[in-house]
Every structure is written in C-alpha cells, then in structure tokens.
Image 1 (spheres, rainbow, N blue to C red):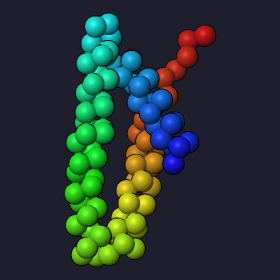
Image 2 (cartoon, helix red, strand yellow):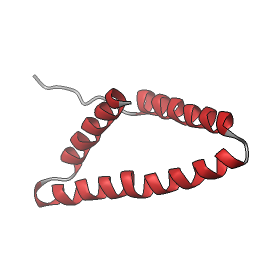
Image 3 (cartoon, rainbow, N blue to C red):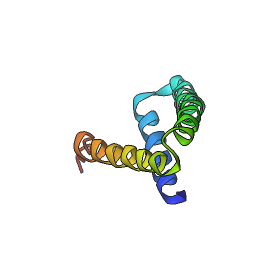
Length: 86
C-alpha cells in the first residue's frame, strides 16, 4: 500500500502543480485533500460498511479489487504522458 499510495500521491500533487498555478496552488492542494481524503474517505467508509454487512467481506473485497483494476485501466488507456521538447 505504501508504494501505490506514494506513487498516486506524487502524481496527484504534480497534477495539482500543473493545473493550479501561482497563488492558486494552495487552493488546488486543499481541494485535492478535501475531496480525496475527506469526501472520498467518508463515502468509501459508508459504502464499505453497508457492503460488509449485506454481501459480506469477500464480496466487499472483490468489489474493491475490481474498482482498483478499473482505475488502473482508465489511467493506463485514457491518461496521456506529456511530450518532452528536449
């Protein structure tokens, strides 16, 4: 988890740095943190609790694994690497 989170976090901060310039960089990082950790954590905890009770722990784990795999494919196929002009 440490390596995957570290990679994601570094990429997210680079994205914020690219799209929020100057005085807006602090706001961009605040937006990233509040949505990603605040709202994302709250919604994820809520739904995982519901799923843990109803379908069960195995189904909850499988849904989380599927979501991670889906996110990987979205990132791999849809995100473009910026070209370098060196």
